[in-house]
Image 1: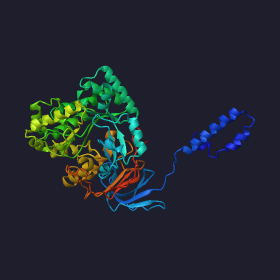
Image 2: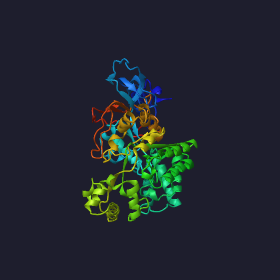
Image 3: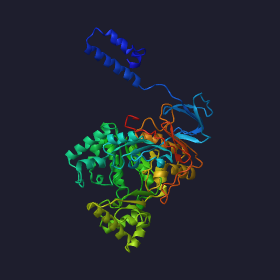
Image 4: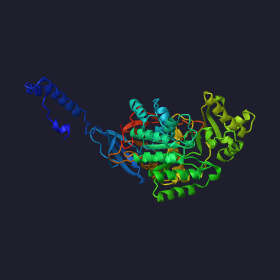
Length: 538
């Protein structure tokens, strides 16, 4: 029986003491301690009452299901959506009323592939996410996750993040913990077993599942059997698998086959990260890719994808050499002919020679009086040497490798949701503009998808694809993550030259019922929550 029923009219502690005067002192003290503990538990029980409500009236509701917009109002209280009402719903005496002015109200957008963990712990205000309507980010991507997650989640809770945060456990992270510097080989059975133990530990902390980054060290050296084994461990705990696949260019189709086979053998949902056809010879084959995806789903494999709306990606120079043959001129020339031309590769950060940051490979080649292939090999080897000598060796590039028509076809696939693959403080504009770019360019201008379907891809589909249960829909009982925007003006403004330019058309954003963004500014509210697998909020 609940304590609230047992103690509806609690007997005063002093009276209990008098009635026990005939008992020995020890028994009396013990009973008093028990009663005190029960009373404390009674007062600590969560309240079931609903506090003052906020009523957002006069809006066009896109509830996240993909259904067309309809006029309505939304009532929320204590961070939860309480009711959907008529557009001109009457306010109650203690309601806080917000006139939506006929704008569109949608669930808060969910970024299923984010690198926001790199700055959230530094108490970033998350304007990069909020200015495009994002209320939840999923981190721990590309095989790289904070470790241990329990400590990361604890630190996030302590600083109260401005947006909601969930995480995967990184395959590369557990591989590095087990194998250390000796990772450039196939793991032994014992090492894989120890990796499985770490996956269990991190899943126990609330990870959504396992992520991999198979173009990066140390994941690039893993065997397929290693991935399947760890995916089976993840599946046994109700998790899922998301992957930056082993190749997005030269060995693309084999890499797609690999993730499909992981899903088949491990029997868990699998998601292709930031899906792209990143090589000229692959351009125009998005229909073939979608056909492979559909065939896998028809065989019962729960395969999904996420995608961001830009021709260019951000990574490191080493991904241009999948064989890690940094001095192979033919490999360098292939990368520049097929993956990205030298005038569309820009160094955004280069520790060995900081003066090169902001310049294209073409420009650096002219500065060094060398050809682009020679310059590319030199840049990679300089960074590798710096790392070996324990000097600053960090380097990142932005490179254009995709075709707009393929991007649009992938966005239109019914099981592809939108992501940023971005940072809150990064040099790629996707961190500030991915979602508004889709709404403005792929919906309003190009009519690639309808507005209602684009919102579905940003909300309920995104939630389903990562396993979040109480976000992504406007419905009673769902969490009150909401975005109010103008579909006639919403657009991104961030560019490679100005990657932090704010979007327009996002009027207001609520995180767990608290106003977090309005008028182009964050409010300073820090109402975000840590979201754990099967445990919506802590």
